[in-house]
Image 1 (cartoon, rainbow, N blue to C red):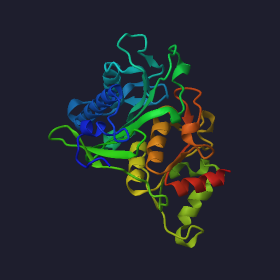
Image 2: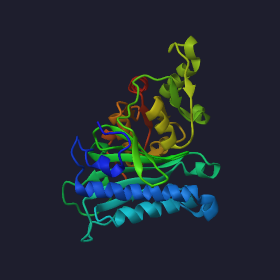
Image 3: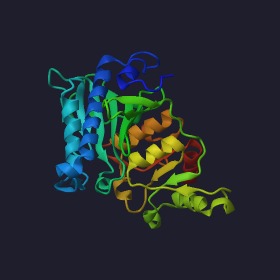
Image 4: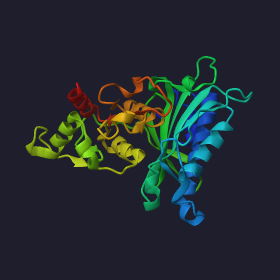
Length: 332
């Protein structure tokens, strides 16, 4: 088991089942962590640098970009592209796949990222985050949109940074889930939460209840049973939390248990759901599964969904294993 308080670099020396992480992947992860550190600085100093509020642009999702969306995307693009270990980059903020494979210094990793998840919360000083996923190419590919359409089961690494009262980093390399906290004095990320786990059973859920009239029957049934509390079929009282930042909501579930739902409903059915498969659902699914939880669309395991596009959306239900299984059974 990794020792608490070790630095991120020290952790990488034993994180692959007790062995050092492969050199190129370790260097790439350090570049990603550097990008997260800089994004955290931009957020912390946003009011002084006049980078809060909306920009004049929209992203491929049709969403008005915050100034910090653009800045965070630039940091991730710059550090990953310059690492020499990346074949292609897929960002929530950019329409096309950014291929580097034809450059002589390019590597064989695909990096998918949401550079600033929950950015609408920045202006009101609530927690936001960055999500990333890494897949290693095992074969030569011709640069094309189809070449990056990899199932979540192909991920070699997934993680997120959370920018809140402190800046945290959560990472899995397929051998459990570990949490780090940035020491502002040195800038280093120190291991503070080794071997994070999600309790199998919970009495807490996270869902946007303003969409209740749009929910499908299985989700409505589950939430109605939770709301009924100890006098209902569940026989206990449930708490509800919702931050409108996937990173913040999932981080709470990872640290104290719960289930997160952004399900299919009549308002998002035409797009297949709300959250993006490649750089939101897949990495969070891997993290939650590695922590002992489950991640589902309600009808299938998230990481087994075959992507049809790099901005594809899916329903997301993840967290405590028993609760996800119950919700899945209602969809059956």
